[in-house]
Image (cartoon, rainbow, N blue to C red; front, side):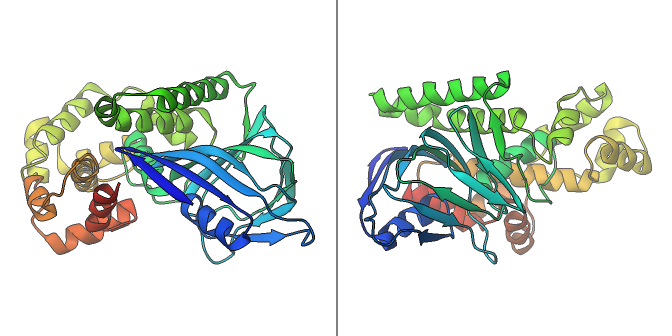
Length: 330
């Protein structure tokens, strides 16, 4: 397997007849798993040809023989994964139920899903995976609060649903663009927008256990709450106390807590803390050079670095230094 980098795009190509090499490739684009050889007398002809665009991977996946993909009971995958067969009908076995994937009915699995996938040798899949951390960060933006429970999608993506069909049209357009683009600096500027649009539209289109909360948070907030959120966002680099919110809104501490919990499902302090962490994560993620995390944290109003590092990992699943390392190595 090799990866040819072109700034923010890495071309990923793997072609092997060795099952251990195939597992290694899948470890990188999916996460912990097992491959079970269901016919040892038939040679493997594994290939993956695709691209990594920031925190999204997309390409064509084939095995060239009958094989079974299995998740680990004790370890979760690292990515949300979508398979849309161009040829063949992979069979999923999950929680005592079975379902097939086909071109008009793709399948999406979440990192916490436990399943077996039975794949025949002629199956060719369009494969897409998204970093768990990145998807949960965008979900957090949509619901205006930390993601506590794992995000679980309904597994079947029906392309007869107009929203899902539109999502696949978006994927096809971006595939064509990334395949033919020539202006690397332009794409570097636009990459994060592409990623964000794709994942946000997936969260809005494909039913999941956060769909109701996402819908509620797309509704309009009362004007006074919008003004409060604007006050927090404008002053997030400063220390913001509840007394500041009381003064800005004319509401009591008890009333503020009631309003925030009604509309945002968290306390004012939790919202301030989460929004500050999100600003720091965004600045680190969008940097194209080595930066000083401590300086960024202080810039956004952090006063306790130890607590900041713990809270950052709780929200984004990685330390600030790990986020930075990914950016430097990209």
